[in-house]
Image 1 (cartoon, one colour):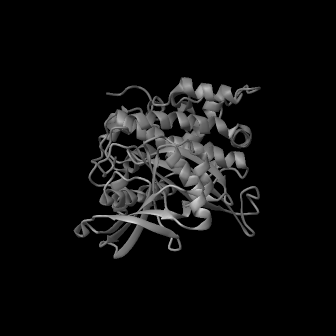
Image 2: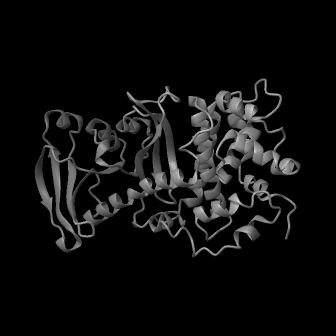
Image 3: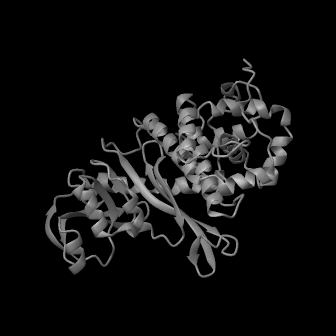
Length: 389
């Protein structure tokens, strides 16, 4: 049945408008704005993400080619490249960062009951960061190296549904371990990080907050073994020890006991050593949890391939952060839509269908049902398994 509305406007129905306007008012986004509101700005940038536009001129040309349909797409102002550029540079990026936080909260509630491959009752998060390289002469504010600029996206990924729980954007020189200071530690939750995040003073905060962490041990870590637990070596566990740090500084920073697990990964022919402050879960479960950390790497790979966050429409810090936050909002909108409509297709397939059908006036479910879910993104089975939610 033809609803008489464009698919783009149907997708935007999943946006909580009241919360969006609250974010705008919080940062006075409508102050002295007569035309091209923050909502028009968001729609333009979201359209660019859905259709992977190359430039501001590209956005302007594509939208104005459908000028008779702009009102039905939700736009209330004329689309001009100069106006969009001005908005990217001047509209406070925190409007879209806060709105992404609203969408994160909605998505987390929808995916809360999903399984992620390890049968535990705790909430499990994977923390990591990815670097987006930039040209130093064009983006001088994004400090990284003497001849290079970059921004980092720090993400705390909820493994139930692969939903980013916390996101932060920094310049390239911001050390990843400092992202631990940004976390509001959730009691009872499990945080999985790689060994680049080992800072025992910061990790001790998790223990004091009744939360757990799992990471890999560094080869030069000094410790004393207090005693060993019995293990089933047929499962790959080589040892399960209770230890205390013996290094001069590390012992002061982390005075409590830790658990050290040595695990043999037959699949990759490697021996991995984990440390954790969780003494309840089995050693095999700890190893399985660390394996799930790879999902945050796949999340970064996916958004870099399917969202426009490696080439930017503006060069200012505000324009770059605005584009990244709106791109992540598009990801979350599609994830929310997928769950509420109970779609079987992966996020990749949904984005591909939407990219060529935004101007159509079919019912959205009819457009999405025209493609079967089994033939998707054959070039990357790893990503398909992750995002076939």
